[in-house]
Image (cartoon, rainbow, N blue to C red; front, side, top):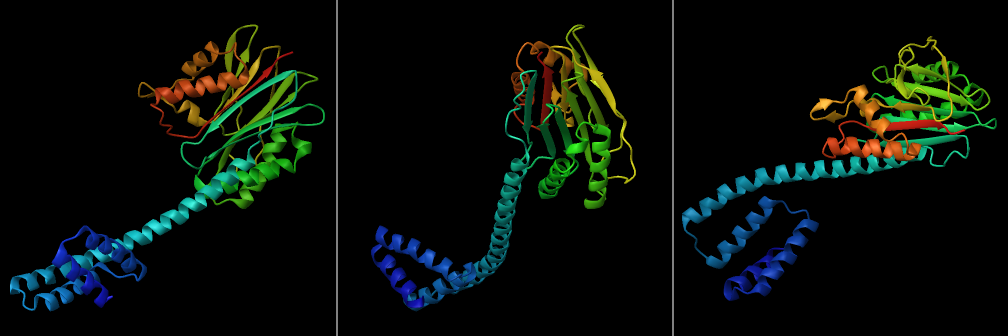
Length: 330
């Protein structure tokens, strides 16, 4: 390295050519490959320069002592920065894996049922989401729908969602019994997640024979039910402790009839915590927004609501956003 640098510096001092500067750039790549520190580079330059110049003013030599100290500090900081950057890249890679896993947990197909119309939009505020939703159709054409919010983010949230999904998949006999479904999920969550994490959820099931929507809530954001005949919205509320706090919990189960064009609205708190003109949106404001789009399909409604609220927040979501609408068509 010494002789190579000596030849390069000699050539530059003699010719001042662009070609010599190009060699210097190539030399810097070799320095990186050999993991040379900044202070080693300065020391190399001083040694070669002293040999070529034979005698340097004392002030010049002393100035290199100061430069060496500066480069030592810079080198330490640079190596620490490199280490942090490598760690950040590793974390970014892990988050990408978790995000893909999280996405794979969510249903992607459509419910093939002429009597019902389903719309869903779920957008994370960041790479990972704390929201979870699900919908399923059983052999008797009962439709189960769920919206949940994991209090936590990142990989732990994704793992919690995985646990919820597979627990629900193993409880098909309880899909028509929302209260029992939440009781079973609560026992699973309480046994398997940390004490500082918990999950809110609203789960409901629509019976096409009775045209009733039966639902229960585990401390989740209240939804809405729209009565087309009266053209009015009412809160869809049910009492219940969040999942994961206590093992022995029972959940109140309620049922409401759905007439043609009635619909259910389930949502996460990221919807009601959107800001309009700097203030949290009121539930009545949200109702009015839904009302102006109620003539559209369920999927169009949720997309229009999201676009309006995203625009009101200057396209910066502060929390995960999930909105689901289930409408009876016939």
